[in-house]
Length: 196
Image 1 (spheres, rainbow, N blue to C red):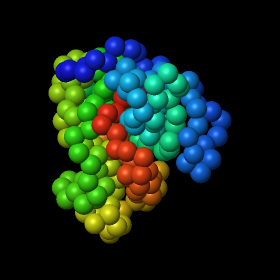
Image 2 (cartoon, rainbow, N blue to C red):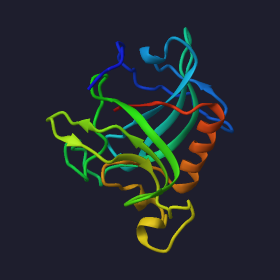
Image 3 (cartoon, rainbow, N blue to C red):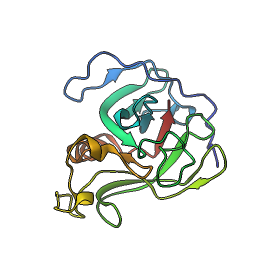
């Protein structure tokens, strides 16, 4: 897996106490070296080891010679409750170090039609710590291909239990739509980083 010049370790986020109306809030996270040359955006997934379906996904802005800023944050789930990153289609999203915690964002779509539907962000494949290759990794929700709510379970958001996934990162429909709107306005991230 190429690191594309990523030389620094991503420090865990120590967030400011409030995020008001999506305004940028300064954090103490260290900007990844890949973004240090100028202003850019990336996603940052912070795993909650005590409750994987109550993790956080951040849209971050990094600025040269300054601290990262939170543009938006969302509750996110990953996996079916398993913390085994090598459990295919069950465990949470692999990666918690600089070496294996970086994903390329391959594409984003609002009309995806597959096992998952609607608003999706496709992440690159990843080998877990034991070498098992994890594929079909997305940031997504539960909706129809047109982004609306459906009647079958996989297309209908019913509440907290829907944060469980087959190993992807899952947001509620309103949050993934907000993420897409903010990314479109500010600049689409090309990278997602994972930390515990």
